[in-house]
Every structure is written in C-alpha cells, then in structure tokens.
Image (cartoon, rainbow, N blue to C red; front, side, top):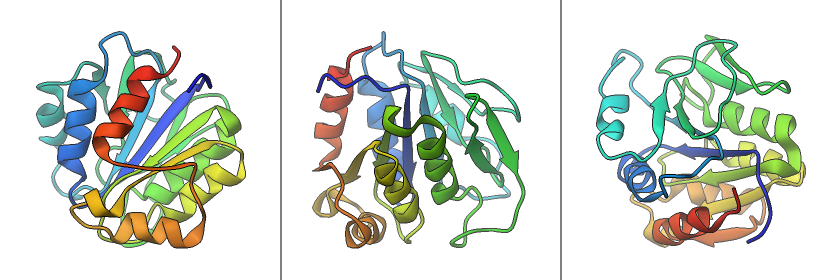
Amino acid sequence: MDRKFSLIVVGGSAGSFSVVSKMLSQIRADFSIPMVFCLHRLKHVRSGLIEGLSIKSNLRLIEPHDREKLQPNNAYIAPSNYHLFIEYDGTFSLSTEEVHNHSRPAIDYTLSSAGYAFREKTLGILLTGANRDGAQGMKDIHDKKGYTIVQDPATSDVDTMPKAALRLFTPDRIMSPADIIQLLNALPQ
C-alpha cells in the first residue's frame, strides 16, 4: 500500500495483549508513524501493561498526559480509567466521563476522535475483544475516509468485537494479526 498515514489507532480487548505485543515486537525499528493503542484495562491496576509491552517493543511506549502532542516514532497506550481522545491539533485529551460500553477507556471514543481529527490520514485497526466497543469508532473512521482493518474473527481469541464491526460496516480489509503486521511494516514512512 502506498497511502501515507499520519496516525495509526488500534483498539482491542480480550485476547488483544498478545496481538499488540507481537505488533510492537515485530514492527520495524524505524517505524515513524505515531501509533495509539486503546485497550480495555482494569481500572484499579495502574502499572504492568506498559512494562510488559515495553520488554520487546521496537517503539517507545508512552501513557500520554492531557494536552501531550503526538510525536513520530512513539506508541501511546490509553491510561487506565481514562477515556483518551485525539484532538484536531494532534494532542491528547483525557476524560473521566461515564463508562461507555462498560469501559473506560472506551475504544469507540479514541477511534472516533482519531477519525474526526485525521480523517483520510487515519489507519484504524480493531482487534479481538469481548464486547462491541470499537465497532462504531471504526465506522466513524471509515465514514471520514480513513482506512479500516478488522482482525479476522477466525483468528480472534474472542470474536465479539470484530464481528460487531463487521455487522456495522464493511472495512477496507479483514486480516490476521500476521498480515496486519506485514502491512504495517510495508507502509511508507
């Protein structure tokens, strides 16, 4: 694919830790497009995820602060118990609004805000998960002319999330984790 993206945003829940870990360890070391991961997390457990993912990651992992600006060569993880929004000026905003789809951070909010802020320069990826959070956010990216990839339900530990997205709209691609990683590594920087 020769399309250039300004942001890659990834949502996942049950079963996604291993997929995200593989993505971060297998992505090429000179990958410069900022990546934002919104993963369902336990709200009272504030540490461990970043440390666990950082062990093999080729990218610098950051839990962003409110108003922090997206930077190349970084991967960002939505903080526990905060909704993560991406603003038009390329900064993050954090919120403690009510839970959405039983979750905070809500994948829908992160994906939707990315689609509105970066439009056709957004690449959205929805991974395995146990509820429908993320389906509407992916549709919003699609509606704003961003590029959308949904993990193949047949390769998902829990297929509820990818199937919810597929019921809502037709993504650009349905792919296995290995194929997603291959596509990411082939993107122009």
